[in-house]
Image 1: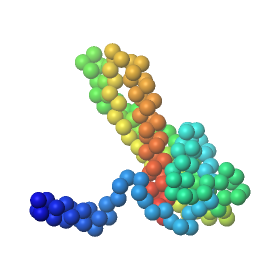
Image 2: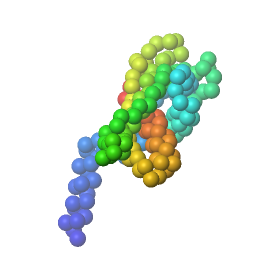
Image 3: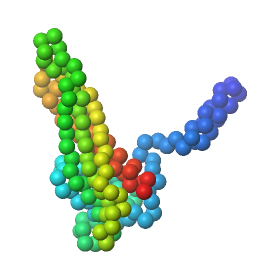
Image 4: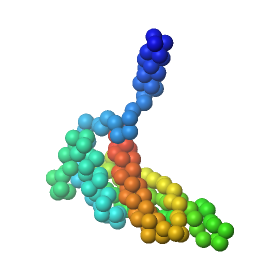
Length: 161
């Protein structure tokens, strides 16, 4: 019993010593506050996802660009599919999905805080020809999940600056 307890504490201290953090637990810089999100050529769901993430870290998100101290500019996003597996009848069975977001962070004065940067999220989609409607809804769900992941990656990049 004592060995198990001791092992647990040693494991805990090793994890904390290496800088391990649970997903979503990042330290945002104190200067980053009052941000406006500018969506240029990206999916409309990305803005609310970023807004929710920023507000979760107590960062004020301004709806008005002129009142914001920083502009988080979502320059563009793109999604692609790549066939990774085909069936014996040469029908695609598996795809690799890619979602790429390009963003930058500017100060109110127009100075570049974070230059144009990319985050990429990937998922794998297996297509079942017997359930083609289910595969379509699964693809939609995967892209939605990839947008959430991309929003979290952007927040992580903001925390490193």
